[in-house]
Length: 150
Image (cartoon, rainbow, N blue to C red; front, top):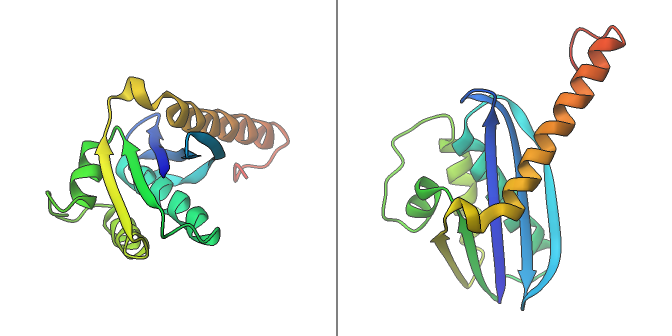
């Protein structure tokens, strides 16, 4: 069984600087963690969906789509939309939602479970680490006279 913890954020405002983090456990053993920059002027929901897509792609590359997958997120919106309980009414994240649905269809057994933020501390910490790295790199680039921030 695969347990996938995902998190995305937008800071310092929403929309804002988007980052993501995810952690994957296979039969209780931590097999992958990843984090990174999503984009500027993106919503927290877009970042959450980005984390989901990145995690699902990683699993598919390993050929583990036949295993039971439980995706755990503190985003009620993502969990309820991916479970089919809530509709998508548009928004900045709608294209990422469609991408996530397409990826999820590749799995034999996939489910989505809402968890409180406290139970998602690993993925949350990774998304925050990505944000801090982004800020450090941007500040460093600006100090070198690069006004583009990259």
